[in-house]
Length: 389
View 1 (cartoon, rainbow, N blue to C red):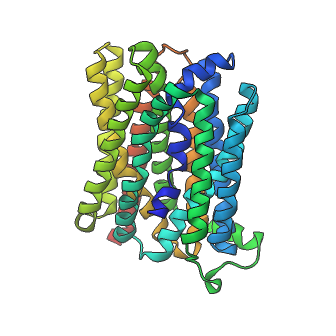
View 2: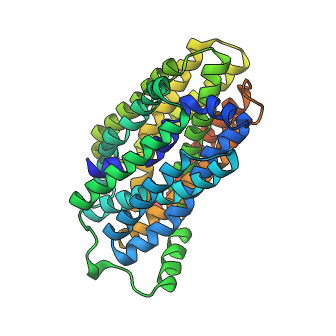
View 3: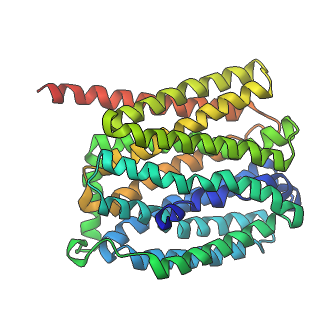
């Protein structure tokens, strides 16, 4: 439960304030694209934080970096609530992302410390999504309800309280899963060697790219969904939260289906199935947008597309980390850089046409979904001759 809660920093920090994003833009005299930069800034911080936290946790253990990150996350969340301008908020979101990254990267490393890799690790990652999936289901609905009693600043205050609560829980319950004998010594030289080994592994790079492009699909959705559903199709913030929660439920259900099937089908086959479904659903969403097919058709396509990420994420993570148990933190960190780096690039592009432009979001979601499927197909094709030999 605690490890699953630690992986919720990403969805909580992005989803809780999504219903209030249009009001936030008005309050800070910002355009939709500038408001979406608060998502990009957080994702950039998450990428940078994972790049740092992964190797540090391989050297110092998991517990101490985790506690430090949680404390800073709680403080920066409270400061976001006091931001006087969009520029200040963007800067604070970078700091918030760097701190929040420790929870995600170290939780993944802890799983790898205690599992044997492959299907076993993929099954545990999928099980963690039962907890992690609660955040995107509850956060937008809770955000909509919070807006009934407070403004967007209040949502950041709530994030600060959540960070403080997780810090208290980690102090009491988080174990140290990396004993001193398995920690890296040698400082930067050892870290460079571990990163070089990972980056020379074509399979690791391919699975990390699949994860990153898949997350790019999600961030395009996160950045554009509130404007699409509220401004274009007229949903209330509360109704938007319900739609968002139903989509997140689809992702959780798909992850649990993957957990049941992965022991027999294998993580690579489950990853391929999720990417194929995402590519088809993303293309259908783009076509429906071009044809003005209506809200009902768009919602069906969105549900299938977001649900497919529940099959992609746990299997891509497990496959990327399966061959590198000696550098689980560094591998988790590099995956995070790819994941949140590509996600950060996608977020502002979703709003490039303004608040009522649907097409950029649709193009991004289709393109990232198809690109991820293509990366896996190329990686599998390259590995087949070696397997025959």
